[in-house]
Length: 327
Image (cartoon, rainbow, N blue to C red; front, side, top):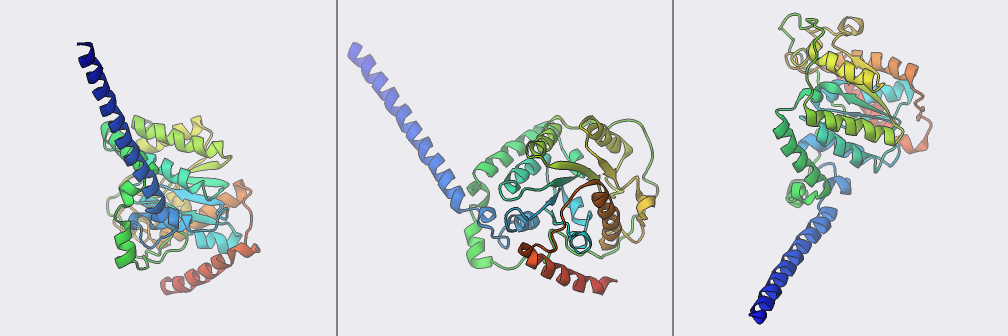
């Protein structure tokens, strides 16, 4: 009887040991594989997923050369023209937004960026604060995002195929800004209906917004909230909620929607797609406004005489030359 119990115990230990060895092998595979199979870590910005090309572009920049980083969803793409900031003020800025970017993903994106860059200012475009489908949906997305962040092989397991057989330049962009000059006017009428009510923030989204802001402050990075003009997405309830959060956390907040008249955004000529995003002409107007705001409120260095930025001068000249076609 005693011998039988000993044998059962030995078998249990053997099974547990085998299971732990199996887990160790899987974990080792994930860690080692993630080190090699990660186009972002390798700085290969022509083989990543299309939504990540601006993010990958930033990671391909020389270390500690970007002073202003813009994060958020697709609204960031028309928020500002980095090449104008560079030409006029020598401000080294980069848009690293991604379509459909959730706050949890934004947090891990920023963690990755801070391994290579030491920005002085992070601009958070605020439209994605209200993109949550449901709290449960955000929890699932957060788990997946965290797993892919720590084990990139899960996300990029087929990246080598693209690198070998499909590697080709992605759409041209200038520090995360692509020229989009199409005009599809907004036809929905007045969308600035005032209310003093607040839109409720999803709990998971708010948690990761806190995490993003906290990460910036841990690294002595100033934070600025900006909301791009988006008639299809804006509401005063959302505006009030972001304003309340910004006030509670001592964060400046610029809502381009409520500043439409001051910035002179024309909903007939400055809209790209019927009301979700601005086009090139709207971006240039917002750039003028934000350029003045940044120079008036932040001590951002002028990098134009820095020898590390030769490519930035070349990139700006290329951008300005292309821009002539639309003026």
